[in-house]
Length: 382
Image (cartoon, rainbow, N blue to C red; front, side, top):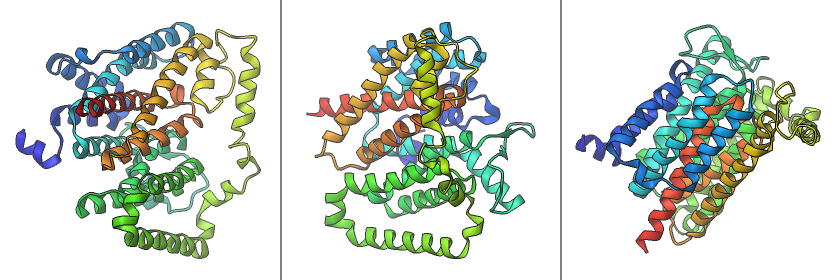
């Protein structure tokens, strides 16, 4: 196990393996596989020692959400009340115990796990049906049936992987950069294939944010490589637009009239908000998704769990801000945490996470734990 630990570059190899199996989401039973890292953490790593107010808040949120919501599946109840609070503690333990480079490796492996099945499904659909398709639904590998899934469920996982393009602007071994670049390109291509405007926008935002966070380091050491990389990217984009415009269905989606409203998201959100004054306890499942985690929380379960979720969100933003302010820390781990943190926050503003992709909410809980653990670890080093 020690040899494997040195090879992968992480301290908690078995815990990382169990988390990877969980977030792989084989046959859609990720919440069952989540029992593996939870049991391991509770019995062998004494995770209860890092219990804090965020753990209590996650438990209260899951409880009140389950009490007020009336039309949710049993697995979502189980996820919110039990899995997410414990997964948060696992994340905090990782943030405390893993050093900079190993933390980067942990985040990459987990993100790759979340994206693997969905990315392979898109690639398989491209091989079968060609690159252009009118439909945004594809058959997902590993679900055991011919069930099709909305593109929302696909690029929610691809989004996690695309954030790792940020690592290309940080200091790390060339072989590792090449590996990350390969997956980043695959994520971008598959996002274009499922016509995901959100994924494309987040990808652009990731590049800009990575340049901003690492500007001083880039100017001193990697400016030439960044110029070459961005120049190559612009050339590739221009070539694709010039020669394959008809195959790029995502361009038509960017030209739709609903782009200014975010795919009618603002209209849907205001519809829910207007109804909340009459329905403060939720019960509005019959209405369309607001495509916003917080507003959809209120739509389903009312203002009480929303209030708790807002407190959790404030902890998330504060943790992200604290890591950003550690400007003397020019490590790849800091860059990775910032990029994933911002990208995840953006995504939660444009999709119905709790109902549409509870796995991503578990990733949110895990990641908040990682940030709080890393913040505590950095403070203890001073």
